[in-house]
Every structure is written in C-alpha cells, then in structure tokens.
Image (cartoon, rainbow, N blue to C red; front, top):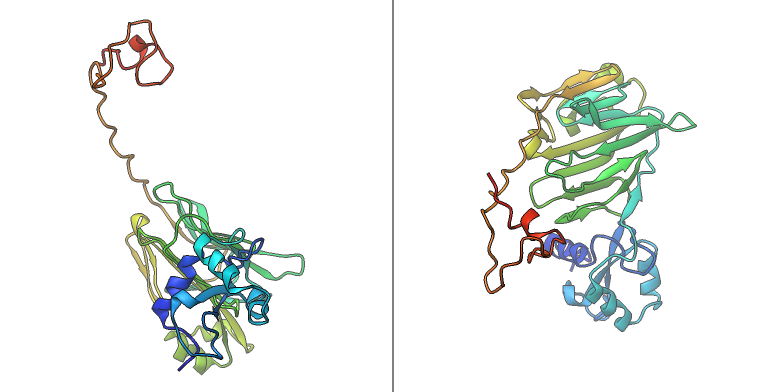
Length: 299
C-alpha cells in the first residue's frame, strides 16, 4: 500500500483540524499525515479515525512518541488549529517569470488591479528580491485570503486548503466558488517551458534555470477567472499575452447593488406581548421609546 492517503482522506484530515497544525501554539499550514491508531509500522491503513494532520515539525515528534494517542484524539476532537493559519513563500528571486492566468508579466509591478486597487502585485525587499502580494476581492463582504510581501494568512471559511511541505504551493477554495492558487515552478530549458505551459516567452528568459510564479484566481461574482491557460477578466479574454510595463491589467467593475431591504411593517405588533405606552420602552428591546421605534407610523 502507498503511504500517501487518497485525496478524499487528505481533504478530510485538513478540514478536520481547520487547515493548520493542531498542536497548541502552532497552526502551521505545511501539513503531513500521521498514522497513530494503529501506527503504520504495525498495520498499513488509511483510516481517517486513526490518522491526524500535523506540520513538518510536529509530525516527526509524534512519530517519536512526543504525544500520546489520547493527546492526538483530543486534537482531533477540538477541530481547530493550534494557532493562526499562516505561512510564507521562501522562493525569493531577483527575477521571476510571472504567469497570471493566460498572461505573462515581466518587470511589472501590478499584474492585476480591480477598479485601480491592486489584486496581484510585486514589491522588492532590501536585497532586491521579488515579494508576492495578493488581495482577493471581497465580493460580498466576506474575508478572503491575503498575501503581503510573500507572507500569507488564511481568512474566511474555506472548504479546502492545500499547502504541501515543499512550500512551493498554496491553494484555497471557498464555498461560493472563489479560488486562489499560487505555485512556484522551476524551468530548466526553453523546451521544458513550452511543454509545461504550452507557450514560452523566449525573449524574456535568456538565462536558465528560470523560476515561474504561477497565479490562478477565480472570483465568479466579479467576473474574474484566471485559469491555467486563459484569463477571463470582465468581458476580456487573455491568452499568451505578455506585459512588460508598470501596470498589467486594470479591470473596471461596477459593484453589484446592495440587496433590497425588507419593508418596515406599519405599527409592528409582537404576538403575546402587551402594547407599550407611546413613551414607554419599546417591546422589541431596542432601548428606544415605543413611539420612536416599532410604534412609529412609517410612510
């Protein structure tokens, strides 16, 4: 039996502990899979009830007996990470080929903006290395994944988070279809780049190996779908485009109108409660006088 669990088991184990290592004080998203009931050496299995997701630091400690089976079951029952779920990309390079959906970017500070607000952009550290920044549009007011200077933090309520120990990839999915995936890929030759991506901008990649930062982003409500080979941004379609200036693509979107408000009823009555005096406190508990609250005659 292969020691790597099936994909469905991996997802269940990640979700079970809130996508971060459950050891108190941890929360690291770089997870591995620990078989403890029974241990893998005693019986090869992929039973989620006898497994737990732990980070690359605490997994070897668990294998060495640092945590009892009762400790690990307690972590599973708690169903939450041991600290904030956050990580950092250590793939710091002075030059990157940047692939955002169906477009390539070189020497571009802002790859994608929405209404002139940066969504995918790059800054440089004191050693002139590129740092990645991503701010998913919060279309609907719910918090979303944010990465600032290559340090990212999980927010909102995702349905799945993938972040292997190699630290080269993170992907986050939300219930409404919002999705972000960032991956670093090393390309050794021009041919390898063409085979991997279907198109390779040779004129910008004279020295090898080349590190490619690949960003995929989907926000259906904002009409953004930066897929593996093609970008659908508003009404525009970008495939194998190359940008080599300070701002890549600035999408103009009119925010959707707010949801309609429920009409306020006239002279609201609360079943089973006595009518309040006009100057008495309103029965709804607002703290205002009845005549200024539920007793008000609305136009």
